[in-house]
Image 1 (cartoon, one colour):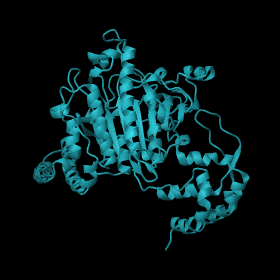
Image 2: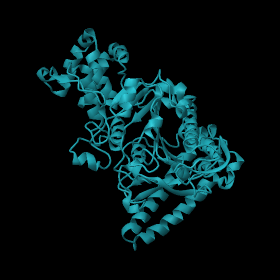
Image 3: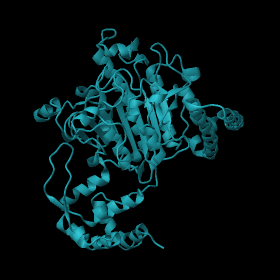
Image 4: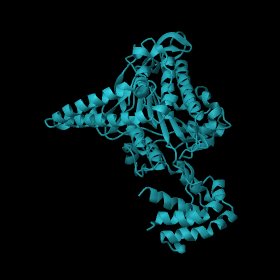
Length: 538
């Protein structure tokens, strides 16, 4: 027996798809294909991201006035000059989005945000009890499963030396569950690609895990509270690792074709490797982890205040403290602002390498980058001692991105004003656009709540299917006529009367713009997309 979804696919789409496909394509409305997973890269940086440094240098006088007053507007990036530190992305402007004005006051700000910037909550100075929920990267990883599920990388340290090995991370798989991360390139390489470079280690691991699981299960009977929870998580991790090793052994051929080459300088934690050398090696590993399908989600802490910066172009002989830079300290006659810019230049060069690395790998009718989003953002708001009033975000969005943001510069309404958007709205948008119908992700902003301003839900104007439906008021009358018969068929399947179908609704406003008053009929495209989306997310 056919359900309503099957009925639509076999009648509405089945009988008319051949004739309507070119018509849909003309408006960018090709039915979605899920043959390939979506991929997400979150790149966290420290020391804030000052909005004026992200603003375009080529703004007109009118646009600059809006930017300076933090009033909402949007523009096309493709014919604009980019800030100096973003120029490695010049040839990828079609995929670039600069998003200004998001706030993150519900998370920790200042020196460190710990897990909070990825989870939209106060983390209570990195305490286990302060981790309220799975962070956004883990939520997305659930939607696009992979052998490793989620990979976290970091280049952090104690001001004089880098961390190495496997250490505590900043992402979280659930409440009170801190993730681990790979703190140096060689460790990341060994852990991610060891099943291929050293197959015997898998059998050894599996035998050890079997022993540990029996030991831990025995202890579980006598422990309580957080200790029991941590132990339960440990046992789950053991089981997951055994399962993962089995999957990796079956992927050996494809992994073997894309194993990155790691310089010997990174051996034993790479104590003599410079910051640029570590960055480059981590980028190679990140690209390979995505290309081989080991993971579809990577979180990368590219620096924090205690990261020891050695070998930075322009200051090659200096050991630079990012914390000192935040307080205005320069090095060897180079101002703190210029050193900070040089650090960002190097980091964005790595973003460009990720984009180009994925664009070089074919996937379907395009490349792997088509199904990838990369987000580069500050962990602590707008400056060194940030308040979280603004958290500028640089985004690279592939051609098949589920969000309608590529090639554009957005400034959303300022914090505490009508229409303002928080990181909670942004994360809700990512989840809603990729199959999680959550009403709102993250904690609410207290100032917005005090003013009784709406702050829940996604930024609907960014979601691609919503944007396509919004464009219906631009369709030619002949296009509307082509959908008339299909509209009746869809309405019949939904059990609606044509009186309801022919109702009219106002087109939604763009970010920060007044609502349009021109009415838009609910045509077949809108009905069909809404119906299938609802059925997919039941």
